[in-house]
Image 1 (cartoon, rainbow, N blue to C red):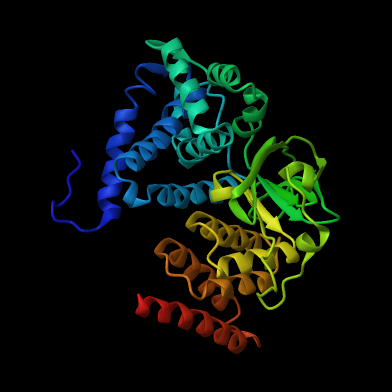
Image 2 (tube, one colour):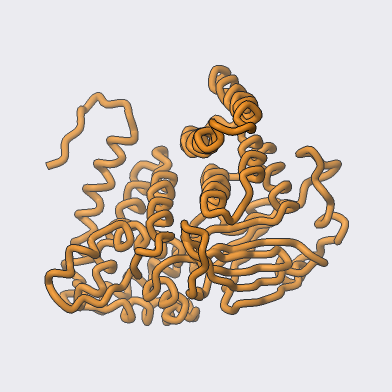
Length: 392
């Protein structure tokens, strides 16, 4: 039995109880009414029960902002899946003694995260309609992962099986590198370890597997990407299916953009007109990292300072930059510059994610020449945050 004090004013413990209760109730459909065909497909039980628990909690208590907690926990899945010792969501089980090994964050958190990624790409209505069909078709019976992809392909006319096999049958995930050039989006897919590293260049997009060690892996993904330009109302989605791909920005977005407005440089965090920022992985529903070039990074810093971005995007941009820095895929200077854009941040989730990147580099350089320089940067940013907190 789960209990909580009736007069508790804290949403987090109450929310956690709601999520656990919803998770177990979700097993009525995912695990009981429709049971996995074999332990290889365990994630159909646990990944879906995890995802549905947040869906239910958000529906009942939208004021809790439960998807922020979902994303925070998904980042733990990203961290673990970036290790060379990780395993795919679907693991071949040949003996009962192997079962306990797959009841972990990969089956639960990564499983739930790739479900959220697919629903965001296909659309909630289409996805839930297909899910209802899947449950009706396999009620009081067993199902395999392929059975789910089949009904999703029927409902969406998208290559769900091919798309999702790249996420469930291999470990890791990609990093998307982005860069703008000549009003073209060029996509290139590469593989690096810690996490698959998908590199999107708004003009050039590259995909590689990301590993915490910074080394390169040999995976390749079909990546569902949702991209927005200047505002969340101007967005498009597409699949990055190959190692290298190029898209014309005007054709892709469906309206004309001048080279001057797109290529306008951002200096000292300011511009004379609306800064043409581009954000990949909107609300970080995709299970991958994004690496931006310096120009796009400057535009996103402007968007952060101008309060144009959602909590999830502000959280995710920082988390990606921190992870890339830890894997030696990005300079510490880039991370420190990004952190300066959060000086007026007041959201608790974003601030809590900001403190660790601030303190860890301080530990790294305590004994060398740069310690006093970094301390002054740290004091500058923390003073700004504390002043904002006192004012609210």
